[in-house]
Length: 455
Ligand SMILES: *Cc1c(COP(=O)(O)O)cnc(C)c1O
Image 1 (spheres, rainbow, N blue to C red):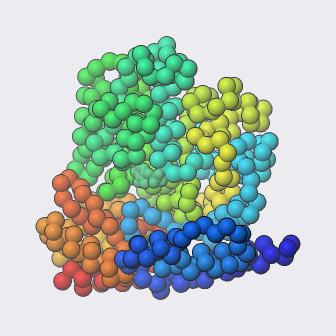
Image 2: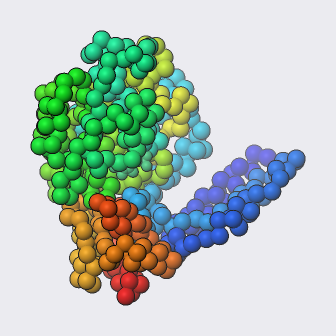
Image 3: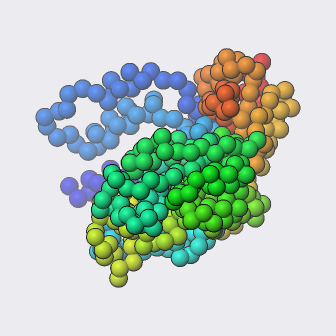
């Protein structure tokens, strides 16, 4: 019996290794028969237990035809990164260790890893060392935590304890956000009880960053506490808001500046792109993903707050959040989860594997490859619609119907995978270069395939 998990875990690791090795050569995300896949997983739950080896074999057989090679070098859909080897191995250990990362009592190691990784993250991203770091599931959760802290603070300043009294009868709060914000901002505002009608949208400039003059006018237009949602990395264009100027404006009006930097905040980690997020340190809260551009396994993201006490006041369920070490908020004091996975191990391992220069090189390489993509497709006669400032490229192939046909053909072909998006009323192909293993050859192969299929 004692030998059994031993063999089982090795088998699982061997399969994961074989799968990873197959990624550069396997078709990327070709269409599948979803119903057949569901059937392969379905059937009545057996009365009797099954031997773990058989369960694993069944899982492998059922899942394999429906796996998307999104961890591979030619998947350019959404903003999907791969998973670094050390980070993936650490994530496997995290499952093996099965730690409860609520606080330093339930897992001292998990909390220590989060403390170290949090300090490295803040340093790389240009966030003050005194900020708190909540290790959450994704940038959706990070936006929710950041905006919960904002809600706490602006209402406390208006003399209202929102954690106790809720929003019914609360003083009105303004929520100002760029019109090209990510959809998760709206969902966070819904979950926090603001609803989406409260949003005062601010127009974006030519490449999708917030128009600073319009923000200035919007802040002037009315008084009252305001939460302002800024962005580093427009999901379509990669454009970053002018954070320094925007944060100064927000603070001059007594507001709270939240930065959604799911992938774009990583611009801070390279001297080549650092200027795109100048002034990032002035914000009050920041949301950033690990599982996108940093190439950590899912699910991994970070909610940072300039005021750890505000962060904990908004998120902790222990009245005085004294569950951690000596009163400093840790672990579940800073996230919406109570019992939680020990996410810090994989973050720590991924950052150690890359090192400071490796993170910078990853950012620079992806940006260079995005420019190569844009140049290749432009020379083939297609329209690159955005200014490629980061790792996102928007391409038009004529009218919407034709662009849709090209996207469908590329997805069915399997050489590479790119999705469609609507930007400023147009259907476009969106290419995101976010994988640490993508090479120039991968880009050239993909440009050739897209060019052939669009012909
Ligand atoms: C991806 C993304 C999000 C949401 O992140 P998840 O990790 O999917 O929760 C939020 N904002 C921006 C700009 C994004 O690109």
